[in-house]
Length: 201
Image (cartoon, rainbow, N blue to C red):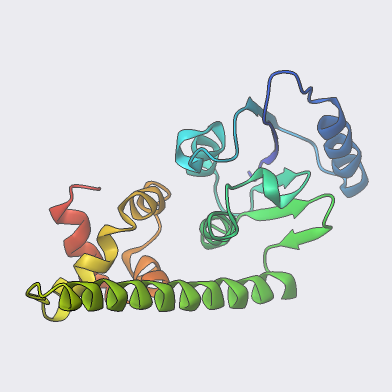
């Protein structure tokens, strides 16, 4: 049976949970949701999701479960991390409600827009990776160093190395190799080989 979870995060112990808890309770009551579990933690948003209580919650959540937060900024440390986490939740079939932004993410138009935005951010991320790779090669060439540029998937492996922590985090959420490959603009076999050689699984 689907469960409803409320997640609260504050940055310092001096802050209390009362405002967030009140907002979440009011929202849940309005929607007719019975809160099955509260997840509360005092931690910085700069910590990886997988190292937080939220990460453990996401791992156990199942299709049609509900996650309620006061605002999406409580989920991640950056726009990319927030969208990556939301993508994981959407792939699992979890419904996400954000009280302040009035977002409902699931099987609806908002989620389709989010999917588009996530795809766009992944495309931008790929462009940035490509630009940094070209800059690094240009610097080596200007310095008179041999480029030794690897071919095929080996070049993609070099690109992925910079994002090893992020890939490891996505894998911890059971994100498929194909989905990760789409994010970083490479083939799923490249991701699989990278994960195997780096012992990330």
